[in-house]
Image (cartoon, rainbow, N blue to C red; front, side, top):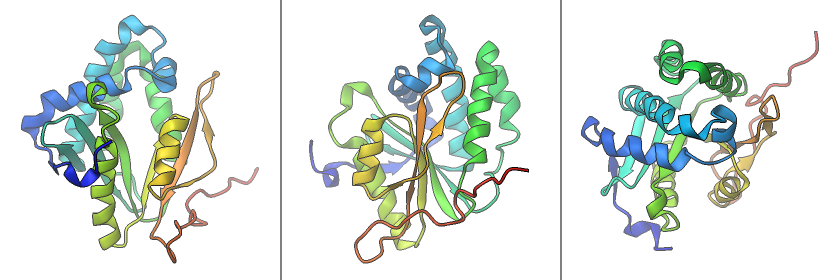
Length: 218
């Protein structure tokens, strides 16, 4: 794996959209969440192209999209304080249109993520993807390290959801702490919630107490 300081990173523009949509589709095409969202593999690629076209353009408009100079990797970030990001509610109808008969699970996933989202200021890594042909070269780590340097300088925390143990362990190495896991219904996969606060004495910061409020029974 090459050092991350050899990776050139820039902010994406609408001109990058075509290639970055393909990167997102190919990177997320296989895996436990993909199997849960769209069990039929014959449908998955077409639905994902429509879905990630929507996701990428929303990120370009309302968030920050980072990419490598060769467009082989992409990260979509949103600044979050306490309210959902701009345009989040308006996306529900567009997600339904893009995903068709699979919309209930996509919308359920979004609702679960929002319910368990930290309610303290942070930046949210919604998606990070590397073209499968370019994986294991440190591109994803480079994208995140670049963003973390900016966040640390601004004293901002970061949050993400990890959908497999390999990624979860990578995020741990990058300074994230694991929160309580989230289990998707109907035999769905486990999602690990990850929080990266400002380092305290060289150790990763713990989850803030108010990040994941405990729901008391009525």
